[in-house]
Amino acid sequence: MTLRKRILLARFVLAIGVIMTPLFSYAQSSTSSFDISVTITGTAPTPTPTPTPSATPSSGGGGTVLPPAGETTVVLQGKAYSKAIITVLRNGSVASALGARDDGTFEARISAVQGGVYMFGVFAEDQRGRKSLTLSFMINVITGMTTTISGIFIPPTIVANREIFFPDEMLELDGYAFPAGEVNVVLNSSHEIVERVPTDGDGLWNLAFSVERLGLGDHASRAMVRASDGDQSAFSETRLFRIVPRGQTPGEVPAPSPSPRACRGADLNYDGKVNLTDFSVMLFWWQARNPLHPCVDINKDGIVNLRDFSMMMYQWAI
Image (cartoon, rainbow, N blue to C red; front, side, top):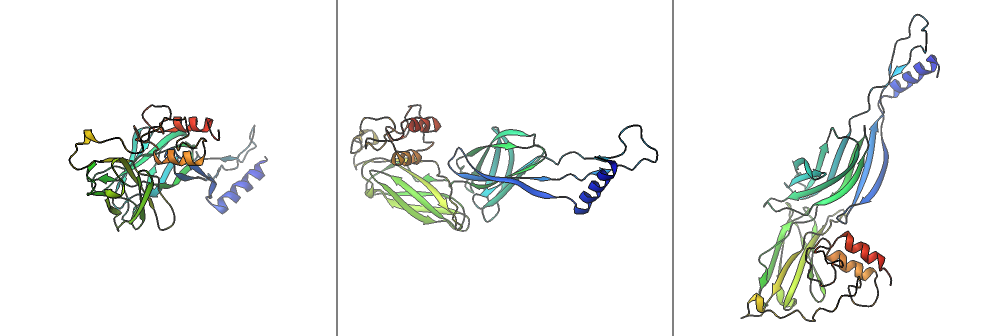
């Protein structure tokens, strides 16, 4: 490029100023069964023209000098609970800690990041000091660009009043979720029961449920929240509880009825084939340790995770 063309190019860039433009945006599934959106933006560097020498240079002549690329930054945006403490992990170490806004939203900004592939994790601590599950996702950070990760939706916290119940008692569940939303509480028994309760302005929710509807034996509960804009979170951790007859100690409880059947690989509902029904059963127990379902931990390593899912995919539609 001639010196004249270089000067004209520099003047053109100076005239339009700094350009901020999204390079691309895409949805990415995390390891915690939710979708995030990643947008990468960059600032076009402004060339600094060098003065034209009065004498003819021996080689090359004048030109433009480009400043270094912009700062590498990662921004994380999402929904949690009012006044929650948000912790951001980067490759397992704490990268940022901040408070959520009163409306439950948050934005964490991490600067001076080196380009590369990172595993990020985000969890929240509610006003009563209870921690949510950690949402994890892998992101490729590009040097000199701002990587914005949006759509993060922290699942609710959930606690139960106790673990052992008599049939005439009430199970009381509560926790925090996104404010002014609706929490779906799923109770797993011989059939699935879903109870819907609202969250208040801080995100507090609670449910009182008569366990008489469930029958004797072992049961599980977990929760997810749906915001007014239609977004929904992943499920919370699973709370296990047992219903025992009056006059019996927990160790004397008979096996739940019907008694467990022999496992048949990834056929989790025992209908002779592996399909979406079995996948939905696995999703219910996702990340559960030592699940009550006798067969959902397909490889028997004590947790329902991607290893079990990959074994299900191998047996899909058989």
